[in-house]
Amino acid sequence: MDLTAQAILEPLLTTFSVEVIRYLIAVFLVITAIFFITKRGRSRNLHTEPATAEQKRREVFYSILTALVFSVNGLYVYFGMQGGWALVYEDINLYPAWYLPICLIAMIIAHDAYFYWTHRLIHHRFLFRWVHHTHHRSIKPTAWAAYAFAPGEAFINGLFVPIWVTFVPTYEFVAFFFLAHMILRNAIGHSGYELFPIRMPGSKAFGWVTNVFHHDLHHRDIGENNFGLYFTWWDRWMGTEHPEYTQIVEKQKQARLEIPAS
Image 1 (cartoon, rainbow, N blue to C red):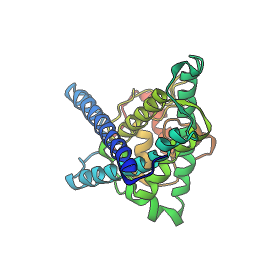
Image 2 (image 1 turned 60 degrees about the vertical axis):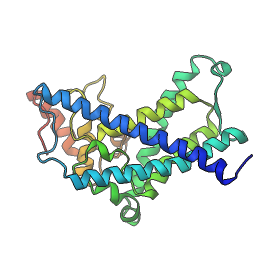
Image 3 (image 1 turned 30 degrees about the vertical axis):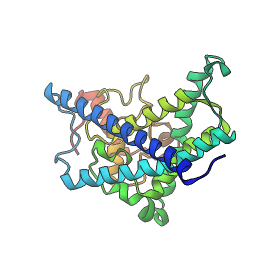
């Protein structure tokens, strides 16, 4: 295996470029959605005041830095594919067709669990200041904050894929789609606009999916609530769902009111 400086730098820069492009595409998709929702006169803004230019610059800076850290983590996968310890395969016929969607769904569910517990961990008072405080500087985040992590938090978040592919055979396109889903959900969740259906929370069909307001409450209060990423079930099982989230959802169902700005 070639581990010269050039052999390392080339995949690092390629992966970094892909991460940055993926981040920018996700953010611009969310900003475009917000534009059209606002243009149609539908008030979905969760914040009473717009974010400052300084905040957005900080969010972009740390998101680009996170993309670099993710790229360093990605070297494990790149060289692991060559060395045989990263179970990423290219041949779509290697496993049955049903394995592809099952693998993707399992990957998303596993990542949600990984995120919930590592998120709770970095909220511990001994770790919060050094690892997670940077992200919570955005009390009213924007889509640009999707990857706005300190290097330590970026490293922890970026470990999931290397761990997953060490143990679970994963088709390349499944990994690509998972990463696209992850950044898009992050951008939506930090957008400050409720881009999910207003009456989704509390519904039997989709109440288990986190909406924007769910994570916005977590940023607003910086408390011990709403640690989930994609789904609400870990917060419900562990008793960490924000009580105000449930109360507002109930008022919403009864009065059919949109979520008020915080």
